[in-house]
Length: 414
Ligand code: GLV
Ligand code: MN
Ligand code: MN
Image (cartoon, rainbow, N blue to C red):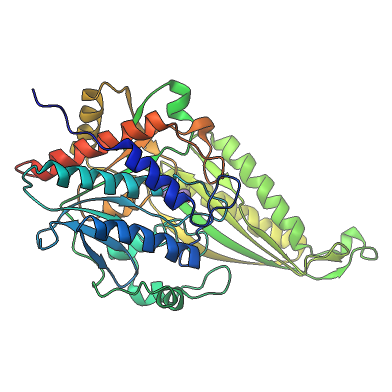
């Protein structure tokens, strides 16, 4: 029997480290916020690898980049990939693994000479993280037609920058129209970013879907005043409201129980001085649940709490939705395929939902989609300490390779 096709682990490890050095924060982590100079440098590097491989590199109007083989193909490809932007204090695997393992799988398929029934392609999508420009999964959302290009280009970031200007500045305004043409199928490899696989000693996650995500930005306006002279009963204090909401959502998630999670991730006070009751607080709330009904319940409870607080404290509250995505279920036949391939590799497999958002949840709107998870050490991610052991990265990349191989050689997809 012929040896099964396998990726080159040293080549993938080397590319992970080389890309990880772009925007390195000196503590093992990476800062490549979307559309910054560091993002451009990372993009240029991955594009150079795509070109070295002879892929046709296409860039669309929102800066999503796809490398396709064969370069002259016109049929919808089997697509893999993820993102290479990171949060400001990110690790080197989140997103990057999916792109570079995808590239590695494509390189392995090309080198094998196996006859393809359809093209194969690897992509990285613009601004998956959403930390600079909301919402998250921004580029893939535009790709599938969930966000109009004009609106996307006009989006203002937390630093006041505008997406359209930044895309132009870094040279990634492409010519391919959006929404893009749906691929034949999409498969994304990603680190789990949570503790489940490691805790259970399982090698591979066959991802069944992605939980619902609700992001809001809340701006509370009160009355700025002297910290020493203003009696407590006379205060209209936005910092108190921000703190109270952080405590409230923690309690709310506790009351609702898993899988409800709740996070206040950003708080800004103005004028942010030790001896001034703030005039304004701006903060974000991230709520997630695998059940849409439960997520709506959490949103309603938060809204009621904010209304009551505003009344009691004598402040005004404005809310702005930054992201709202319902839970997504992946194509059952695709999930089965991931599970079967991983089992065939001798790996233990667990079906599981994803806690993090992913480009795959957007692609699932337009084509059969699946994801492969690898374990995360201590379940740590969005942190420079993010780590997945080499053996798990290699195992995940080989599962991705065989899932892609099946899809590019099968009579029909999925
Ligand atoms: C993206 O990484 C998200 O889940 O926030
Ligand atoms: Mn990611
Ligand atoms: Mn992330």
